[in-house]
Length: 144
Image 1: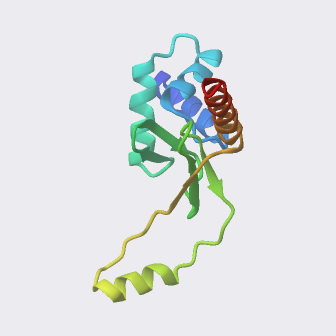
Image 2: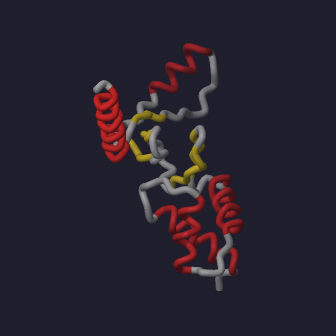
């Protein structure tokens, strides 16, 4: 029989692995509560940290946004929206020669690398267009 903590950890891991959206701890908590209403936010945070420390999931830190969690621990790159903070996996080949060349160039023992491409997701692009259009419309009205 699984202990309560093990059951909670398994549930949290299932929630993280159930999505490709790189969820925040708050999102994981809301999803976990659907199946285990008495789970606490602190329990979710502690277990996410433990799972990340064990290498079972990946914790992703981005400036100015809450940490996100990735159930895919294989080598891959990310693309992040600077508008809403959304993170997606990039379907691109990770070339190990990059690490070899970087190590040789700087005489480092390279242990790994991370690449994050930054931009605006389609939703935020649409919002930016609406804001720009609204701003232009207001300026036109002021010139009269």
